[in-house]
Image (cartoon, rainbow, N blue to C red; front, side, top):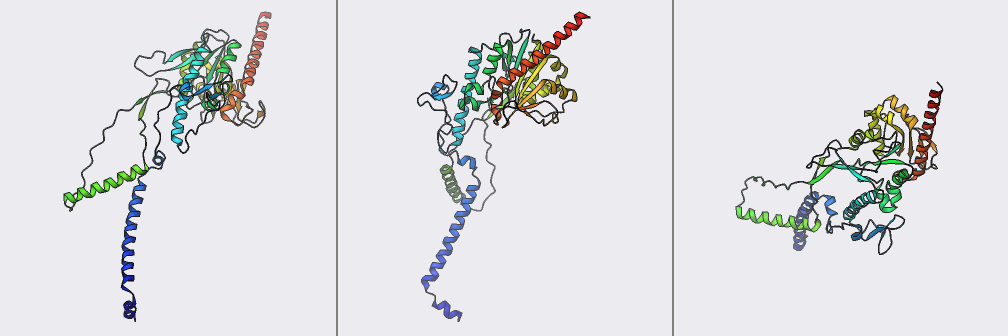
Length: 410
């Protein structure tokens, strides 16, 4: 019966089945080859296709942006705020553009510190040689000589440099909220000397020397004739190159290496170095500190290393959403007790400004900064911080006056 069925199948149908089997085999081979190629492609690289060059303006004017009378960054032609997504579907390029603007902002803030606030740079390390990387801090004219009060400003971690609390706020909101300039001006008006620290300037970034590609390792010998193998390799290589070029057109970024700045290779090292070489040598009888985020952690680490010095010189510390942790940092009980009396932490919270909050750890009082945005805590607490400093100083002076009065009676 089977033989009769076979005879009944038309020859063209048999031919069609044979062709379909061959075509299916070819499709499977193509699919396998495609999967092999796709497995070698970095998805991040796919996003780099057809990117414009990473060539950006060097000044605010070339970017066509400027700060208006309210300290807001606006486009000089449209008057609109900064737009991050200048080009759709090119996130990496937009990010690089944003970073380029950020570097310009950093230099702009330095200029404001020097020209508007009359501050000067002090190079670190203080005994740096000509051929080693250096950092710097900013000092008011009386930072070291003011006999009464000194304010020390310590920012958080990240891309921000001296004079900044948050780059995002400077670009998207205004200079007052994102820079330390309001703190500097208010402090000077109230008779403080001022030191602006630079805890994130920890290294010099230099371009790595070009690497030479090693010679390809010899392949296993093949039984194919050399001429045929070369033609086959050329053909496969060409296919792969065409495939990669179709999906990948990445821009190679310059490879760099970081040379740490001596004794200033981290925020913690920097704060301790500035304390040892500047704050401890300043004439001010009363030192006040404002430390934001990671700057709070660096201050607590300073207390761990210089506990008695800090207690003898520092009058009060205002922390803003501090990242410190007295348990992880193994802070002594005596330091915790001192922080209870001399520190206050304004933290991000939906509660109204200055609302007392439950303490999370037995270190210092916590109050609301009046905002849930971490980067805004310093600016939102601005008025409260200076009131806190004034109250602490007034109480200290009253106590000293009372002691003097008792001494004179004796």
